[in-house]
Image (cartoon, rainbow, N blue to C red; front, top):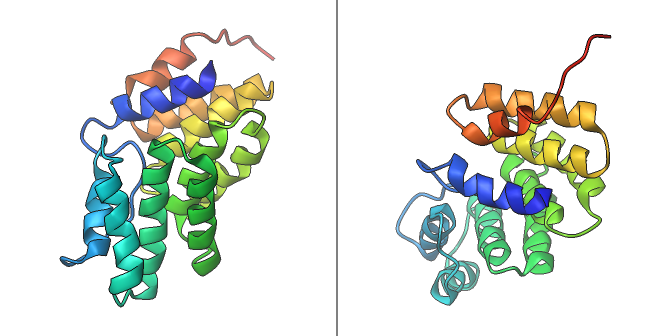
Length: 185
């Protein structure tokens, strides 16, 4: 199934970084601990979520740090499989800052994991790209999977191609592209 491939490939793609796109928080606060947990490729422990929750309760968060903490906590919920809760956090981040690309990227990633939600994920991946996500290859790749899920094979091909161009070292888009046969007009 394509969505399992997306989830597995995001980890493969980013051996030098996180599977999801966390939003940086500076300092030594609970919000920073939440960011570090979201940035990790494996963390979804209860203590990581507690750091995020503590940030909202105890830290005097700037608007940027609040938006970042919603995104980062959403990533942790997504890793735990709590997709509805993750999406609510991404929506909170978007409501506070409609230009935060990582909120759109991660919401798209959460939606693509939900059966029947591929079509709804496409505009989110597009918004992440329009707002200059730090992980454009993931946005193109996720959008490619979503396009393929809804039967738009041509758009999927071009998104996989764009994912490969955005991160030439990532093998998975090339693997997906190898499945396609391109014919003239």
